[in-house]
Length: 97
Image (cartoon, rainbow, N blue to C red; front, top):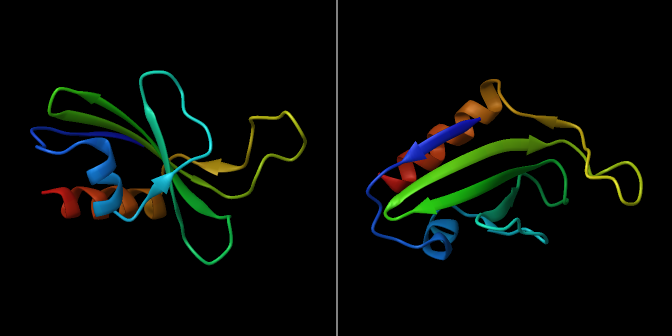
C-alpha cells in the first residue's frame, strides 16, 4: 500500500522511532527499509520502504507473512493491501500528524 505524508519536519530516523519501526537488514539506493514486528517473532511483520523528497515522505507498506522460502530468494508471502495493512497505514498517518 502506497501513501504519502507531506510537510514533515523530521528525518527518516526520527520518523522510524516515532512509529515504532527499526531498520531492516537491507536497503535499496534512495530509500530506507524499515520493519515492525507484530509479535515476538521475526514474522509476520510490517515492512515499509520510505523515500524522502524534502519534507515529503512516500511510504510503500506491506505485511511480510514469512521469510523467503529458500536461500537467495527475495520472494516471500506478503500482503500489499487489505484491512490489516490499511489499519497499519492509518496508524502511521495518525502518529505522524
